Length: 329
Image (cartoon, rainbow, N blue to C red; front, side, top):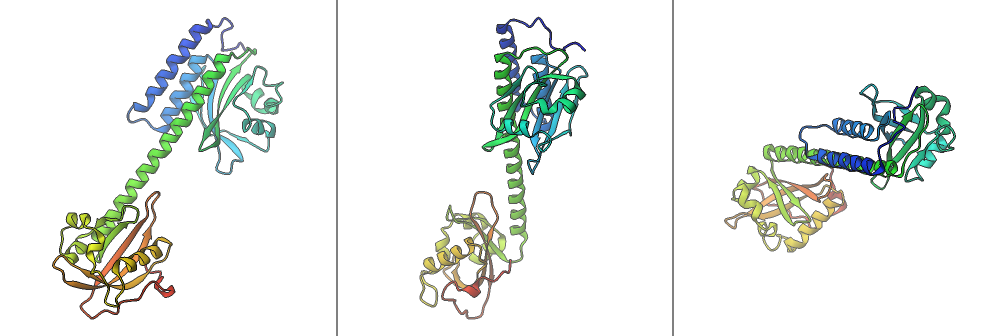
């Protein structure tokens, strides 16, 4: 089989201009609408193969246990075909996996002779008639997360310094693409979580207030809470939470200090249940039973308060105690 890479390569300047144009096209990829991660990765591997005139370009990521690399996409130029799913196990290719974690790039003009890749000789290389490889580690979250692989078939030919630098630039672009995809997924999950929380708050039978401990304000309230305090929902969100309680509780404690103690207990994972006296817009005192629980959130310290009003005289607790941490969510 003859090499798919022409022996008469264009001048280095022309090759460099081609690679720069390809990188420019790939960096514009992120603004294209409606493309999945798979489509983006396929565009990168195909552009790389056509630009570098190599037979095969593939993208691999570590499995969850890091025991193998799994192919996310392989583009074969002669067949104009994408495929995925192949695996390379670390136990079968220990020298390669070790080199991958220690190298900026594995560049081999003769993959059968290079000690970093010769483990592939009897399997991978022979099966696909591969003679030369460039493998660029992909770094994500501070460690090697995968590899971009460029492969020649047929008679070996030498990689140029420009090939190596272009491969590194592609690997960096792939890392950025994966990072953006993960961030978008996290943002979508957060939006969905907040929408579910808003629905649960709005339709809960009890008065519900969600407190942001870092912003020191309520970020969600329902109509039951607004009615209890004599406000509408929007105005209740604007009120300083300390204004919703008298200066002192009936047992003489400062409301501000007792409130902080109960919030701290909830933020540490407790679920305090206690009696409290609030104050509505008309200045009337409202005895309540309150349940606090910390809500899961990636970046904010949120506490949900459930309030049940009562008309009976209330025994005001003197502060958080071990038996206050009742797990009643």
